Amino acid sequence: MDRFCINRGTLLDSSGGIRTLEGPDKHSLHCLVDVDECIGTPYEILIDPLPGNKTHCRGFSLSMKDSETVRNKARQLGKKGYCKTCTGELGDEEFGFRATVKGRVTSPGDYDFPPEIELISVEESSVGCSDDATKKLGLSSDKCVDDKFLRPDTETPATTPAPVPEDQVPGEGLICAKDYLTKTQLSPKLSLEYTVHQPDDTLPDKNTLRARLTFLGKGWVGFGISPEGNMNENDAIIGVPGGTVVKYHLASFTASPISKDRQTLEDFSIEQDSEKTVLTFSKLLQEEGEVAINPNGSNKFIWAYGSSNTLGHHQDRGSVDLPLVTCADGDSAQNIKPTMTAIPDERQWKSHGIMALVGWGFLTPIAIAASWCRDIIGAPLWFKIHMWFNCTTFLLTIPLFALAVATFSKNDRKHFSSSGHERMGLAMFILVFIQVIGGLARPHVPPPNTPPKTDAADAAESGTVSEEQAPPEKSKVRFAWEIIHKLSGEALLGCSMYQIDQGLLLYEKKKYSVFFSRTAYWAWVGSFLGLALVLAVGHKFLVVKKDHSESGGKAKGTE
Image (cartoon, rainbow, N blue to C red):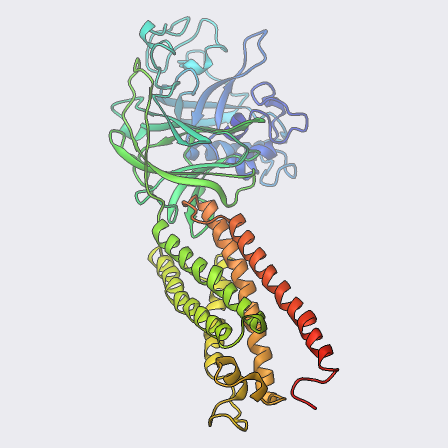
């Protein structure tokens, strides 16, 4: 039986939700040898239950390498065409794969976890074991044996499991293979229980970190070790409800499962009910190609959980320094307060956000509103507000853009490729340069009665001449420039509103200390621009209409 279906609790390919340890004879060979989730976990050998008991026991576990050997035998015995990789060389089986397995015990196991064996041979089930074969069944099989019980680490049979010393009874003292030594709260919704288990002092490569994370909600849960406290270019263990628990490699907002030969987790599961999601696993402390875990010192870990059972952007995440100590049977459980580490690059992104909010969130809306309400504010004040506020925004845009690029580059991440927020930022950076250059190079048509090389419309804006002195009609070039300048300016304002909203959303997702909420931003910008628009439109259609009627229908500047 594959461990994926064991941890799942029910057979993956059963429509009726057959319990794995109650109906292994209904387990299809297709599931066993074809399905990625199943072949990505070690196989276990199940022990038939005693009469009157319908639950099989977890007898022995195999390494991933030995599981592949057994899988190849199953493919030979499987019916060709029923499963994709079955050859049918030795049979036509479809369900309930059985075999005679001979091996050497390498790890004793305990009541919950079966002993591991090193495979010697795998043959058809009809071969069977010889009568004089030594049977060594682990504690995990105590409900499936009668008087032939024998611990893997002893040479004398025993009829019952060795009694647990009084000082190791759960609740009074710990059994390290079953209980958790330490509990800590990672966030208001996420707790962690863990134990460094050392089953054999002579086999340090078998030492494991056993952990259980409880998330008060529904969603995927992840946990990993990271020397720098960030996710980029590190590995993590992620459990997805309805799926399985897998090691992932994290890089630039993406997560991809690592190769099957490195999927070495033991005793993992992901369970969920109406209130919580629980991830459990056992991981070797030292593995080739992975960051080693110090069993007697401080380690930096990362954690995260999602808002749904679909793996995607995290709802919350963080990093933490945890002190580890090897568990000894009889130890007392303890609660610790973790040392939370700063979220990577928080200072840089806060500076980026503050400059964007001051410039694009406050100054630019005021500058645009001044242009809309020019007839109410009057020249030259509206023009000075419009020009200087926009120039200040432009000067803030340069360092906030440079800071974002520098932060991405420091973390070896490609900018302008991961999200719409980044691509929109690049487009705005280019467009604001064009807007400023266009404003400085606006067309000038010297009209009569104005200083040389000065457009009367500009002069009216700056207050050097009255509007009555301005020419009755603007040049076509000037007229076209004004339309383009206004439309591009208002387009930039719209883009900035999207950018600020998405930026504040990213702050919330990253759990930075938010200095300004999205609700407050929309309340400010919506009410302010709405009021400015109402005033501008009201003035145009009420005040101007009144002036027109009082003048006897004559346009200003005409007779």
